[in-house]
Image 1 (cartoon, rainbow, N blue to C red):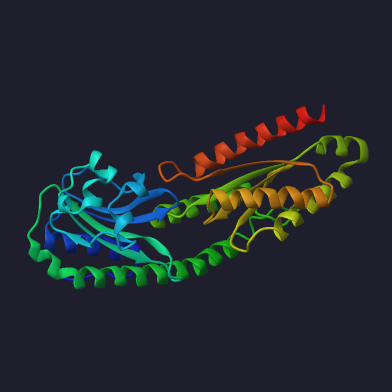
Image 2 (cartoon, rainbow, N blue to C red):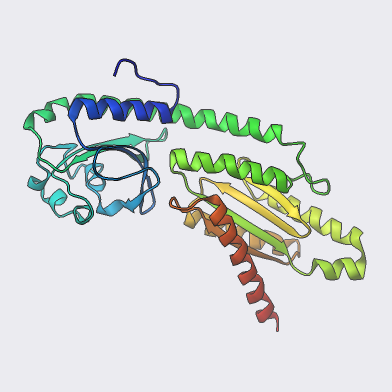
Length: 314
């Protein structure tokens, strides 16, 4: 490799994987993300395993899950000689006889994922002498990742400012068109960095009755009040939009299942406090699918919640 491209995490990662493959000859090099129980492939340099970005494995099944805890070596020329590696369930899926792994670290010191390699043949014990090189590349990628994520916050802010004109007249929230555009850009971020995200669909119950009995002025006031509840209970980098009528949608970025459940309860309590009856459905983006599929599931879950509420009121 003549020149290492360090412009961003994606390009630097590809260059590092290509260089390490040329240097060490392992059939598969990967950059991965750990998200809960999932081990997500973000980038790969594959020469025989048929492992591609977007594939998801169980984190606990991997060699890397032991390596990051210090229970297994970062370089194992003969992985079968390491009991934890030899018994790891990942061996049932792929043929591994040698292994290299290095943690990738977030800015706060938590685990982001790993830089790792596997090969179907044992390697020379001499590769263990190159541990410093592997650690340096891991540190380099971690720092580029941290800079990339910080820059993404600024890019995200710029994107939101550009779409301010695409707002709902009644509430000032994003409209459907802005929502669809922002969903596309956030999906690309999810793919590049393996981050989780939650989508919420919120529907105001019985708004038609309010419009029919009290007039549209009263109905509009409830819609504006609902928009304010959402603004006051979400983070600044979350996306809130009104799709039309009585329906709102939220994209809560970098949110996992547990955090989404907490947000669900907080929103239900906040709307109850202002005496607005709502139905909410949410879904978590799965790495093998995407935000569009999560949105469809959240919408479906919202209607399930609405039916459950109606049954309870009978």
